[in-house]
Amino acid sequence: MNLGQGRFAIYQMMKGGGRVRKKVWTAGIISLCIVCFMALGMAYAQQKKVGGGEVVFEAKTSNLGPVTFSHENHVNKAKNKCTDCHTKIFPMKKQELKNAQAGFAEGKYCGTCHDGKKAFSATAQGDCAKCHKK
Image (tube, rainbow, N blue to C red; front, side, top):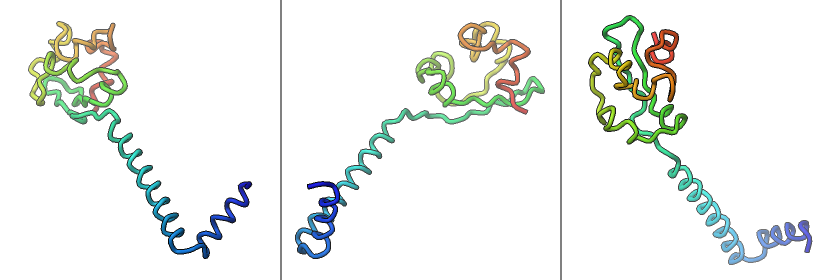
């Protein structure tokens, strides 16, 4: 049987081949749809989820504007794990960072990674706009 005959046979079965066959065929298609949707749902659920979203820190000691920290950039793009920063460098809950800019040169806060070697420097004047958005 070729493809055209198969389509014709399906058509005949749907048209008048009996109610039982039609119900079986319909149940089969519905089952296939359910299985596909479940597979897609599970694949979507297994994608890496990033908690925290974007965190905005106000720059109180400068006029550079606030710093918007993106968890997605640091986890998905830079391939960091949550435990790389939490709780070694930053606490889990957002807190005000006192004298953060001064701590960068000492390798504290963002300066732990943003040292000019592992990631762009947090102290280089030319890199300020990468984090500070007005």
